[in-house]
Image (cartoon, rainbow, N blue to C red; front, side, top):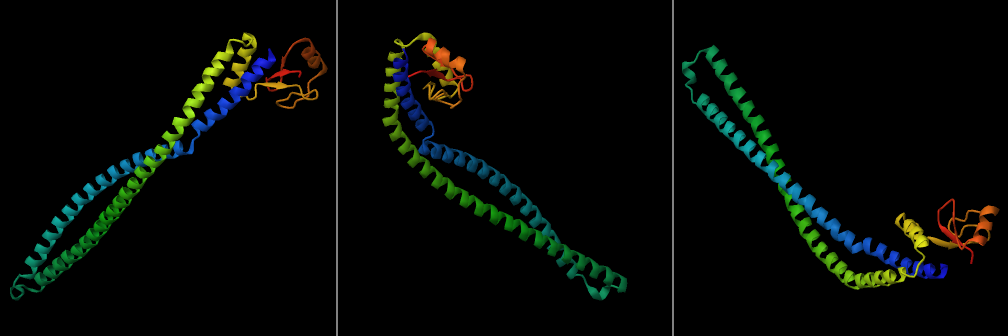
Length: 231
């Protein structure tokens, strides 16, 4: 009974190893990372586009205000100074100074907005190049992963079929315990008695437990729950 399930466990161990390799395949990981990068980059491009649209509208408004300011300065500059008294001259000077100050402030704001546009365009171009590289890398990793799958998947399916065929010769009660441990990620599930200790977790077994091994074909380790047999 133990021999048959040990043979089953040996083959199942090879399957577990293949399945882990299949799931943790580096090309699969990299291909998925590239997909995630492209997705995030697409979202960022959308945000950049929205920022650019807002900036364009803001710049248009500032330019409109700037034109009005320039017109005001020109209008004030064309006034006949000879016809103005001292108070009117002072008021005119203050208006021109104020208008000029506002224009300088507008010029600074426009420069700042234009710099933002340049930054957005630069980031957009950088993102576009990175997306292109990411798509190429995804294509390469996917190709290598697909080639790996063509080799690994038939091996896994062949092992699964062989294990399925072996199940009919296993003790149902013992196999149920085996499947329970496998589901919980325990491996190996069945271990030998190793100098009065569990061959899995190395816990020393009490005398009463050792006596039960002699009476039964196997026992469960109270510490790690593995199935222990006396070889």
